[in-house]
Image 1 (tube, rainbow, N blue to C red):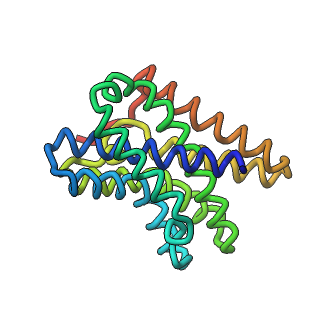
Image 2 (tube, helix red, strand yellow):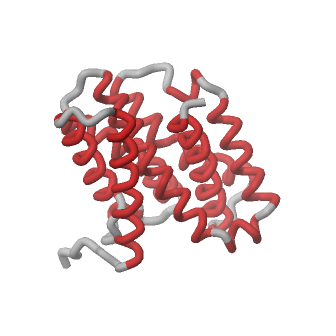
Length: 200
């Protein structure tokens, strides 16, 4: 199995767990929990595919994504207390997830012949807009619209990927470097409280 595909599936499950935990915090019923988990896991990729005109969208052509979401929801429901204690661990998985989703989204956009700038935007949308839709549904201000550095990490990673591709770096090495950059940037931003300035 392709390692990126495996991590993509794992990231989908982790995002589903994240969405389900958010829904628990909002005291939603089982349908609400499932809907929020689904939106969180697949919202960004779905929006990307629709914008690119890639239909049916990816998860409609590969049921493994739905199975991973069901597993994620089940884990969140059955092992809620344990999962809550592992949120720091899931932060790392989430960070790896946004790195992979950024790269996959960017690559797919470039395969459709869009410009690198649009490709970087599509990579960012793939990674973070599931969380944006989740927060809106749960009546929260989306994380990327607050001062914490999140979407900027994906944009910076996309730029790194494009530059390395321009310099003809071998694709697998490019993926490793870009993913490592995104994960490191995100972890350091949280560790040292890097924030964008508020204009108020």
